Length: 471
Figure 1 (cartoon, rainbow, N blue to C red):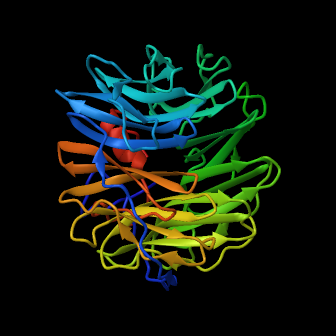
Figure 2: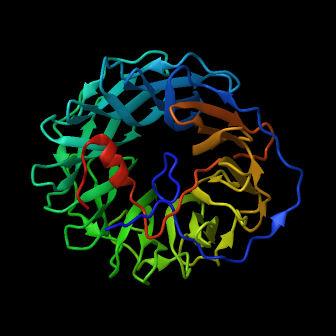
């Protein structure tokens, strides 16, 4: 489905072509402050960080490679991110590659899931902590071990812990698998096939809200790639028949979903117009039916890797847009009416370098961070809007490092923004952290990425995992 031409690839797979557009009006306010970046990882080569913030603390997870094997590391801060404890080895494997960790936390219960690749096999594991991540129980295997499994997702709702992943069969088809625990992760039921097809289902996104569980993914079982969604109304005991929510004639993929009560929102990439654009749809009846997809980007060159945030009636969609062969910018489109219509996109980065991999969060204010080569190497930049996405402050360089910065992840709580990213050179990366010290944020790096046609994190990740999915 997806064809990618890579001019520069630094631990990132997707690049995008971008069309120039009118830049936003930037507010001229005093630049906010951030703590100096500090490493929260230890020895070894660390990458793929994730961050989560709650009233229980600041939590981070990443992979660390040393002496030929990779482990999943976890660290937490109980003082708002000013200090972090010694990282805990969650995977605890003596060999193999523990990769692509995901995690959730609530009430000091932490659930970390990842993919273990060992001797040609690839399985999904999960480890649980009941003391906020100070210690973890022995990992349990979620997948059946007979098929190659990869790219796990995890979600939490009450006493229910949900996990999903893709599984490759002997005929090279890939399907979406789901497993659940109804006793806070003490035990898991037999994995359930959400899809049963002879094609490729990939890049699953998992979301839960009360007794409702939602899974979205890209799927070519009908010949071309479309975005499908399936819903469970009984806490994952069963799933409805998948429905095609993209419904376009082009190729659609890389979905993201957000659920708020009965409202289900989704964005993805779609090339129906001849180039890739960002599409959006919503459901107001809990995912039973969806509105006709809307083209949010409306550009003449490729738009890709969408991310979005929802705050009350406001929906903010951001993506990487191609300006030229060497210039990519970060665009954003806003809806003030729950996604019925979107304003004209604005250019947030608007600089001569390669800007990509945006992340977005909103707590009333809107924060967008990305990786950017404009400073001369890849740094992490961030911008903020205090007026609901109408205007944005000038981007701030958060990392300001001598090496390359990328793989940015972001969270916000109580008017504070928390950032982690991957810092360093090949084979010697650390996980760095910074938090805003005022009610306004700033950040920094990105790898030189060029996406000509689309997204395919699944292709590269599958190559590393040994799945080698045929797409």
